[in-house]
Image 1: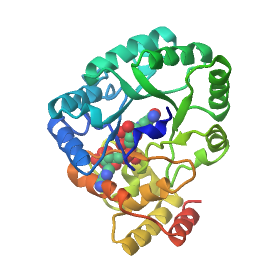
Image 2: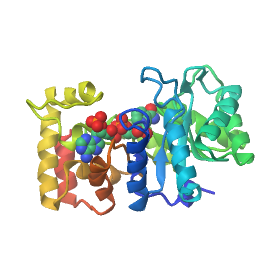
Image 3: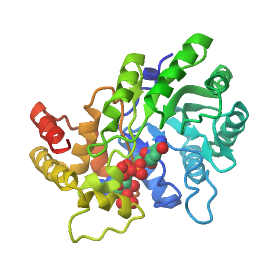
Length: 307
Ligand SMILES: NC(=O)c1ccc[n+]([C@@H]2O[C@H](COP(=O)([O-])OP(=O)(O)OC[C@H]3O[C@@H](n4cnc5c(N)ncnc54)[C@H](OP(=O)(O)O)[C@@H]3O)[C@@H](O)[C@H]2O)c1
């Protein structure tokens, strides 16, 4: 069965905030609001949020698992998580994947992962071994679909060939850095995705918050993302893209964040952009994505500003 069977909501809710910039209560509020709006697709990883002092990874999965258990809504949610980047669970060897998935299932309080991502490429492990391990998990019913994140075009193409040759499950989606300010995906990688019939689920859809328009000259933003996000202000394209976003957003009566995600959603191969929110107020404009359709003029203006 293809990934289309998952009937994904137009916005994938990014889970790296859960247990990081959103505590348990704030996370539950965001998840509740997302689900109430019809949202069904949450993205996390075993490693979230290991970068927080005192955390070791698994915090985000645990929050999502507890929330689904309390709400009794596991069957209507589509849960995506990742393997390969967590300390002690690094890489894509078969042994690592087998152990990591059990840990994730336990934290998520479920018996299956709907979409399991290879978080980063692992050149040390033969693709046959990685894909064979994913194939076994799908056969065992522990995983429904698999995807590749942060893979180069040639390696993704090679992985698809290996799946074909060996009769293994194949990557059906690519998760990569892509937004109005980061368009590197639009080259060889998109060609492989298109030729292979995969879909794209871009992360950092909001350029870590920059494309919400809250980073402006002279404005101080209180966020652990402020360094990387605020840096776009010092580029030539950053302010130019913000001006275009402001204009299109005003035309539609929505927030710049909505337009940034709608632009992504309108790009070839993109199935659903991923973005996170630390509270319900932040989430509202992201949910508006489901209601907004950009016209050709809007898309052209944004395209030009971001080149
Ligand atoms: N595969 C990978 O390697 C990879 C890498 C990174 C991320 N991801 C996935 O992609 C998801 C999204 O990444 P991300 O959350 O770091 O970046 P993002 O979606 O580009 O930015 C989201 C952040 O922008 C800010 N924001 C969102 N809506 C806002 C609003 N309406 N008003 C003001 N600020 C707003 C919030 O950060 P502040 O409150 O901190 O400003 C929010 O956490 C992650 O949760 C994760 O699931 C995957």
